Amino acid sequence: MITLLYLIKKDIFHHPVRNGVLIFCYAIIAVSLFSGNYLLLGATDSVQNGISRLGADLVVVPADYAEKGEAVLLRGEPTTFFFGRNIVPDVEDIPGVSAAAPQLYIATLDTACCYLPVQLITFDSERDFTIIPWLREHDHPLLKKDEIIVGNLIVPDVGTPLKFYGHEFIISGKLDPTGTGLDTSIFIRKEDAAVMAKESKEKAVKELVLPESGVSAVLVKVQNVSEIDRIRDQISARIPGVMVLTPETLITRVTGQLNTLTQILAMTALVAILVSVPLIALISIMVAHERIRDMGVLRALGAPRGLIFRLLFGESLSIAVIGGVIGIVSSVTILILFQELLGKLLEIPLSIPGSGDLIVITGLAFMVTVIVGGVASLYPAWKSSVTEPYAAIRSGEL
Amino acid sequence: MNFRPTNLAVFISALLIITGILIILTPWYIFPVCDTKDPAGASLEDMNQQVPSKMVCSLSSGFMNCWYTARVESLFGVLIILSGIVLLPAKQNSVLSRRGVMIMGLGVSVVLVPVSIIGMCDMTGTICNLGTKPALILLGSIVTLLGFILVAIRYHTQYPEYLT
Image 1 (cartoon, rainbow over the protein chains, first blue to last red):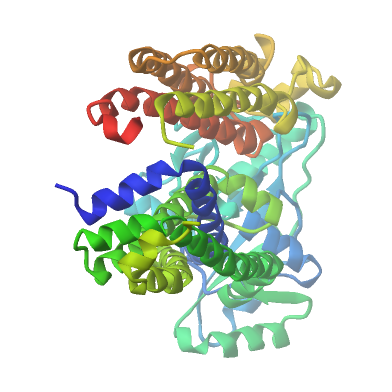
Image 2: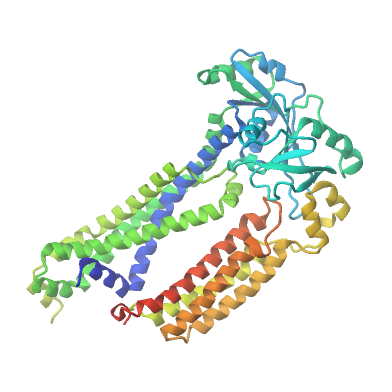
């Protein structure tokens, strides 16, 4: 039995080149719409995951190294910086602060190809609220001497020995992915870092000198989340030379960095839509004109006007649906496969957005693509459906 | 132009040739892997003091994993180009289908070499892990998909009105 779907399918396969070009146009629209939103949501989700993994409401870093501090947290860029003095007691004295955990950032040595430096983060086991809760959550015993926890993107498996500054450590656990710099960082105990620094003079090519303060950043937990802004202002006012990073400042920084790219993608989508709608409409008119005698025969055989309209409109919608699906599937594949490379090139943390967000942006890109297809074919489909069968069959005759 | 198996075969063979060329170029020019035996003059003893010991083992055995992967992928790239060329004169669906199975096998191999058979460098953040490996997975998947389409043509012949 010849159904509407059969006729649509047959015509799409009958003109592979013309329909292939149309599918490509729709795919470009879908790619532009989907990619911009994906990057923005992926970066925002990633910062939120990273902050939640740290377990901190605020991060206090030296004012002169604020950018480096952001780079460590967001992208895991290896760096070494520290406070001139131990500011932990000062932070703890601020009313509303429930806990303050110091961390010390040490970059490992850079050598050559395939041997990239990584960020070592030392933590104080008695005060820490980043690693210790994670260990408890995963029924993992507390870290013993020379045991380390690594970020999700550190390739070697649990149990593998790793050597830094001549000191050998054993990987004891691997954190869940966050999409931030924590994925490429390595957490070691404060005591082990001191031993490593002491031994580095003899064992490493370059001696590691740890600062007296032993603090690069202080992670702060507040008693009441609604007081974050007040506590941030008080820390900045009472302790000179510090910068307080909040989740909002980190998200603002990331979205600011993405602004140019998302604007370019949005412009591409807009231009693609503006160019495609008349182009697709023109092609649809040409197709309708080319097939006007076929339509006339169909009408003469008893096909109602509605069927002719649905046939041409459905064909255009089907092509838009195929283009939309191809565009979105290609975008997702490329964005996921090259996620780390994109994060590195754009200097942003990047992870796969949550499933809810993913459904929304997929639906949005798909709907806009299909609507463009629908709008562009409305007039030609209507025009073909109202043409009288006799006139349609005789059209083109000399 | 109608949708015929022979037209499709020409289209797929062109895509296979382009993909094969990209597979050859990716690990050497697009996302180049390292090709040095003893990077930047650093002695093995120096490396032992600074880097994961597992990686030093791979150094002492010669080149990096990514370098071997690049060489094997170049070979697969050549085979895929040849598959694309021999596909051109093929007209019978059964022939296309058999070659499709072979092309699917090549595509899967292109994916498996950097993922599990040989692998890439152990350290994250290197260009072979960030660029070369995902690019080869993508290209291998495209080759597999093209092979699958050739196999699927055989089943379409049950409905000759689509294809003639």
